Length: 128
Image (cartoon, rainbow, N blue to C red; front, side):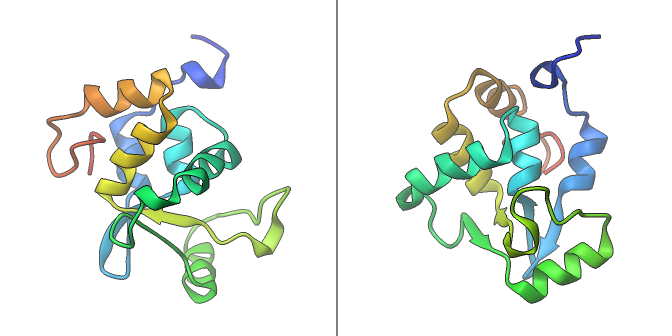
């Protein structure tokens, strides 16, 4: 098995566990999508911010402090070694995840986007 994090494949079970319901919408967090697409979270968010015009409110939103605190209490989520408690993650809907893959243009993002195109419920990822 390869030792590089970029060559690791994310399993369907892992993806299933990354899908959350926030504001009554099924979403994935920026850090989870970054892992799936094989890029560091800060690079993922940089690409999203550079292309913010491609992400309307029904594609992504930033968690409120209350939503983030509730999420952090539900799962073993660290506060992050660089951003600490000030960082509130972004949540992406199915369309947002597809758009993120298009914005990233990385080989891995394209592979994840196209390989799972006919998946049940989520066209971009196996489990959506």
